[in-house]
Length: 78
Image: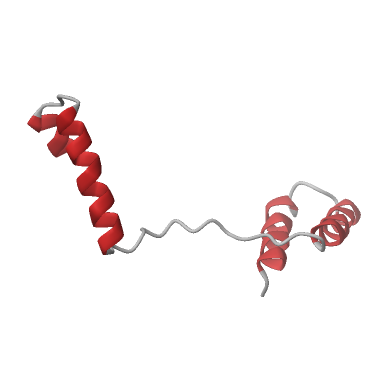
């Protein structure tokens, strides 16, 4: 199932108890028509995989914190 259809089904489920059937169908039809021109994607909440570039950026960030005079305790928390 496409993300657009998944979004529409979720919307339908959320509204089924709040709208009469004919209004719900009008909302679903309108959303389907309007979303045909869009690509809806679900937010990805996965963590970024660790790679050497990320490690180097983290080391630079921590070095900047040291140069800025942050305490070791603060740097450890970061």
